[in-house]
Image (tube, rainbow, N blue to C red; front, side, top):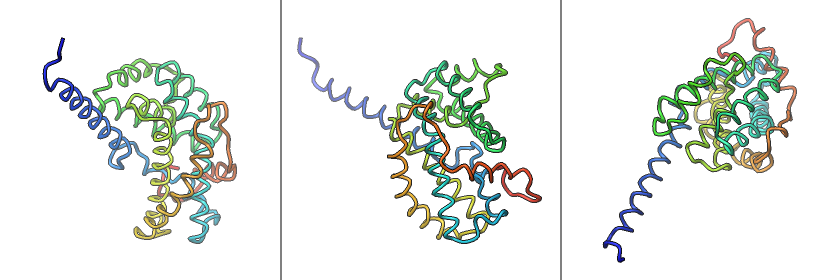
Length: 244
């Protein structure tokens, strides 16, 4: 039977429109206006400044590169494992594993704070994915789950249909964006200089991504343990602008 004229074109148009709408959701996930609390954290930069580990523009750039590399080695495996199987069982297992992996209380609290906010916002914003709200509602009463950021980010990316490499690149992007923003607010670099620095470090971040992408959560590791130690000192600072 001959199909009505234009039927294929209509289906292609509908598929293209659905794909375009999905991209809007994916971009919104990375928007700095999404209130997940990322800008309340400096990834240990504030403590590094007060302990004199960062005292020059060169030190700052080196510190940020180490933050990106450490994030990639430690947290990208959780993002990847979660987005490859975006279901409640996998996410809960990864959440408990990451909670046991993070020995730094400051970074652990920051991860829980951002993860909880991301899950709440995602479930409210991306209503076209009802499973997000279903998974969150089913897990809220648990006394064991901590809602860490990396597994939740991977879960959301997986349900939004983002591919593995793009999702992992996005996670490094928001890490780089937030720590550069923290440097600006700590008056370590101006807005223009921060933008130039972020663009320059992005080249290094892509190399880091290619090195650490597509790894299972069992392969997560620390590449810069000094960062972990310094960030753990954040709670002892006499005066501080950030939560971590």
